[in-house]
Amino acid sequence: IAGITQAPTSQILAAGRRMTLRCTQDMRHNAMYWYRQDLGLGLRLIHYSNTAGTTGKGEVPDGYSVSRANTDDFPLTLASAVPSQTSVYFCASSGDPGATDTQYFGPGTRLTVL
Amino acid sequence: GQNIDQPTEMTATEGAIVQINCTYQTSGFNGLFWYQQHAGEAPTFLSYNVLDGLEEKGRFSSFLSRSKGYSYLLLKELQMKDSASYLCAVCDSNYQLIWGAGTKLIIKP
Image (cartoon, rainbow over all chains, first blue to last red; front, side, top):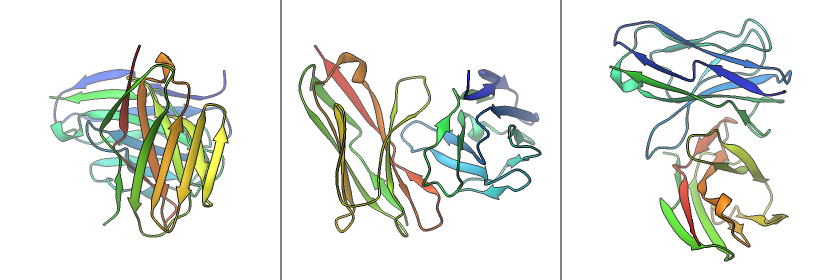
């Protein structure tokens, strides 16, 4: 089934630990995005990639890193997790970069940092 | 700064019509999106407006006025499955999406 998958579905993590959230799409989309969603706030862009091999910083990139080695995968890494990174993380993709194209979202990862 | 405003919560009756408003102040404008998000699920695309006017798609319509920085989503013949949050997002001059906090719509029988 075409779409975006994310793993894990949920995770509880001790502060200071390193964590990688995985995201894979099979739609051959050029652009991919990582957002966090917190109660009472809109989705906030963490990092994005317009095409394989390139990445860019979004609104809230501090404490996060990404890589885009190929078209399908866009992992998000928290080098040393802190409680303020407790959130729901959504990966998304779109055919064309530039955010005027429809974005398709993965099911999300619920992360709790204690 | 950039800002998207939507009501936090609205309640409507099954079978009725509801209008969800969105006002925005952004650096540039390259289109406005509406997404639907059921509790615990991912956002899904509803509509995209880049020119002024009304776009109709089945029971859902979306309106845009760029001069007023205003959009609304109109839902007709409400069904219980329409209970969800509705997210307004604007594509700014950097071609990044700025998201509103969403409007939680509660449908009552």
